[in-house]
Length: 477
Image 1 (cartoon, rainbow, N blue to C red):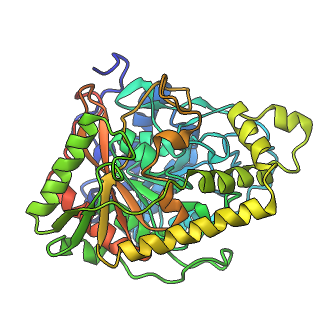
Image 2: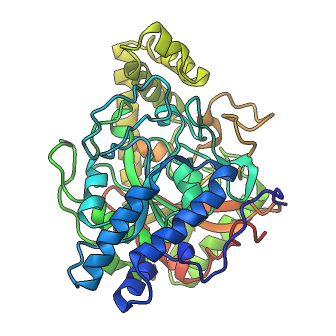
């Protein structure tokens, strides 16, 4: 059962519990204003922050000033963009003008100037969103849980003794608890989907390049920016906003079609490959396996053609580690002794490993990555979507990289369903599909072919519409 200190949900009527779409509809009707909504969310943050530690910084004064400006625009019927007055949060990996982006690290100087927005943040600003603050991350987003030398441990909304997952753990916890309906996360090996699964929210890693990223990640083209939200429809709205082109990212895909209008197309007639355990390679907890199978059965009832089929992933862990650890080594290449000593010990360890790889070993990992991409491309000639568990487990003890007695040394040991699709750059989403015997959320993962973001979102939205995602809220278990 949940810890007695688990954050309790507010009454359903609270503005903090509304989706972005419902907030916008309320603004339009004049039922309430952005100021009302932002005040409700700031009150929620005051309640939950001491219990889960989802924020590294909250700027209430700035948020209220932005809400006042938005309220004036709504009164004067001159609204700006798609998210005018909607409270949002931003993972503290992404630049946001007006304050430091410390990336969970004591090695990053607070000295400015901090005058530039990341592309996705700039798009939010252009569309009138209200910035609440920056959410927590492990140091430089390097692992699948959220704790750092800078901000400490971020905890799970359903049980604060457990991890929220990572590296976008602060964003997932915030969304789950009503501390802003939308958040920007980043995902280099599962960092949107892992905490979405553990915290019972929706998270999408779009096709690489759909959302521009600047500065570029030290982990290169493994890293994606993605939306985190209460449901797929809110995430589609956010994705439409942040997908705008930005010249600072040379690898961006350019203008992308809107996804909001395609959600209702559903899954009837789609061909879905269902892989419950990657061909027996992954031991999956029975509660997780059962919940995911029920989600797959729901897709079948909605008219999708389901076939058990395992993609040929050929255990890409070493290739991923070579690329990931090399990126970490490059990140700290110019750090002095004092900065290195201040690093998370696990990060320091992988940096030392990464620094020992040769160029030939790195290029061999690139070759393996490209081969994996070709195999998944072939898989998607037969299937529109691949469905797997997001994770084989539910949330474990907070403050550690791997579950106790698991035999794993690195976080990739317990995330075998997520990081392969960073190698292939495919869109992948985590959707809530149940809870385990301890009331902890379980996620099902939907993976599409490259550029198949719309197909992923259609499948995810269908699960929401079918009620598969209706899990208890924190404090109700």
